[in-house]
Each structure stands twice: as C-alpha cells, then as structure tokens.
Length: 125
Image (cartoon, rainbow, N blue to C red; front, side, top):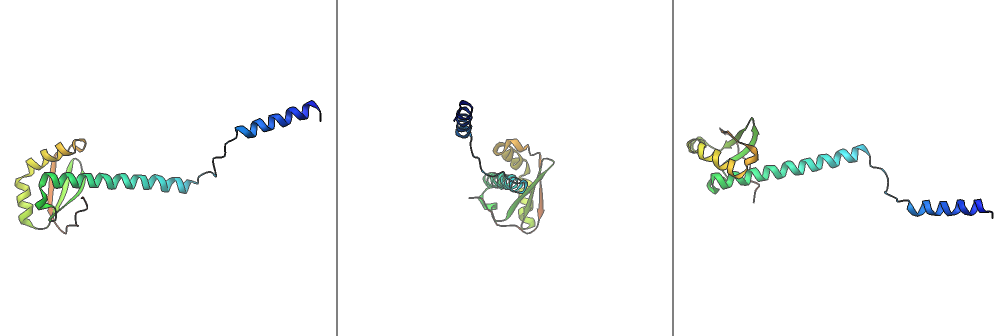
C-alpha cells in the first residue's frame, strides 16, 4: 500500500466520521399536513380562550344558552337560544364589550352582535 492509498483511506474515514444521517427527506404532503395540524391546534386553542373569556365576562348562567361565534371586523358574534336572553345581553352590551377587551385585549372587540339560533354545547372547562 502506498502513501496515496493510506491518505485516501484516512480521508475517507474522516469524512465518514463527520457524516450525520438525518433520515429520509420529508415530502411536501407530510410538511403541509404538519403545518395544517399546528394551525388547527392554534385555532382550537384560540376558540377555547375566547369561550372561557365569554363565560367569565357574561357569567356562568349564560354558558348553556349562548354560543360564541367568530369575530369579524372587531365584532363578536354571539348566538342566543331565545329572544329573552338576547334582550338581556343586549342591555349589557357595553359591559360585555369592556369585559371581553379586559380578558382578551389583543382582539380589540368594538361591538357584539346577538342573534337567535341553535346553540352548540360549551367546550371550555
């Protein structure tokens, strides 16, 4: 074995010792699924935070008779089971807007829109 072969083998061993196996490359589909699942978890957490804030501000007595919907143009949409609850909450609208802005200040809610309709069961603990 000559000096060139010895040097070549030493260099090969050195390269092999520095190589790191990181696994197979991820496919675009797997990456997209991961991003979407992270986004879904974040959206669910935000919804739960909004629901918890609503229960805290409006009161536990409205937990089963109201459903907090989406926020569009700084307006919180709340569905009520009947017109009596709708009217009671409308009278308290100013207090509810201030309370929601204290609980979740990053949303900057300016108004609350109440409507009558079917209410989904509360998910917050």
